[in-house]
Length: 112
Image (cartoon, rainbow, N blue to C red; front, top):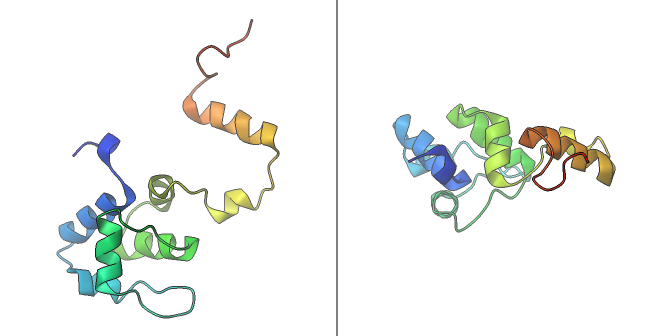
């Protein structure tokens, strides 16, 4: 599977299997913000892209438990990490950073 086809759930599933862990093993290590562990069924739903992680806290735990780059998981989850959101960026600043992230001005929007 190419990285272009990768989803949050597929990344979790792939890393879990590469580490030889079963659903129950990983689910018992991931805690919601209320301190309760997630169920193997909830993890299965995440791996099959039927659910998404409910919080930044969970994304970070998946990264730690499965030794996956945290920023990569945030990207796959379609979220900005809390430290980025706390910067209180303006619309213009977000647009500028997205242009830099993409590697230059969007097509059709270059300098005249």
